[in-house]
Length: 473
Image (cartoon, rainbow, N blue to C red; front, side):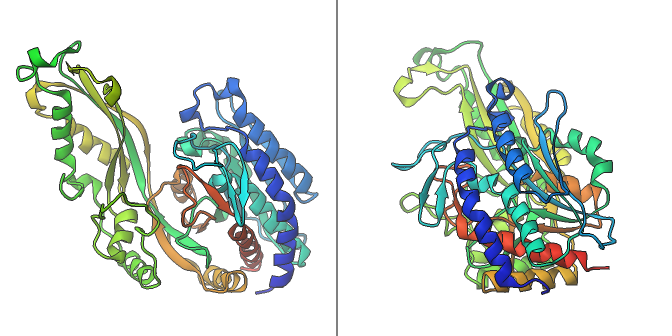
């Protein structure tokens, strides 16, 4: 380790003392991703968030950095902070530091005293939507670079890229990448600050991400609702037909996905990694507030980890055509639509999964009901290549210096579409995927918070990684 850890920590802490107030302002902006705000351009919230982060970067980026907002007609903007290499560093490749500033919608269930757009600090926690997912990323990236300079360290060319459509599946990012490819150059190291950890006591690396397919499954049985007493028994229930279709792809007793196209073999190193994490006390079920006596389908802690990061799963995340209980009349409803979210193993191909699902849902339909399958979103997963020895050494040293423990490694069940895109574009690049999301931080749900000490320590650790990269031939 060439950087003095105490100087790194002191520099980062000083910078973060001012960052917290900016993050509070960011949290107050309802900058929902385009999938949740169709009129995002007219509302201007994403633009306000982009301006806030851009202006802070202009004020705090290195003097020789170029801070720009990349724009394409009709698409969400992308912030690009281009920092030239330290004088004397001959490397011509690029370190790409990634994050996003768009947010999930409000969600219900925030406890008293908290709200999605109202920042609240309680102890080490900064509550509010987007602070941890992923508003802190630009600030962490630049504070890491500041710490490198404060210690007299070195860095190669670094590009900070902050997008604004990640929560919509990064729908706008491919178009931006096409026009930014030449500017990004040869990316040799990717640092992503949009992931999480099973605890706040170490630097945790995400080694795999699941893919996903989101689709709407609609079943129509009659043209309009009819009296359930007069028609029930003669007219099939759209909900029953939909339920039977779901049973074709998911075991109703265990939740196991039945289609081969949605399965993948789990690599031995990932099985060993899950075993090591479980032995260290990591259990994917511990951060879940089960209702009553509800129990998990998983066996032990290792099985739970593999279930959440390497096995497919289905969640029914929305239903249309069904009135609330208070408004339910004795009507046999004409249709039922279920929004289905399939999580896919990291190496599963979404296109093949979609074909298999479409065939399962539309072939030999019960009662010859009308079935419509509409795919809303699909994203490939990602499985990390082996970590280079220099990078592993730098990560372990940084984690030991700032967390007091070596790095941990695990897979997570969420998706970061940009990682799969970059993995295809830069197959020889090294990846560091990490983040401040941890126990109870509850991204996408109520009571989301950023654990401030972890955000500062992550910033410090990334300084060591960036400096180590500069010295690798």
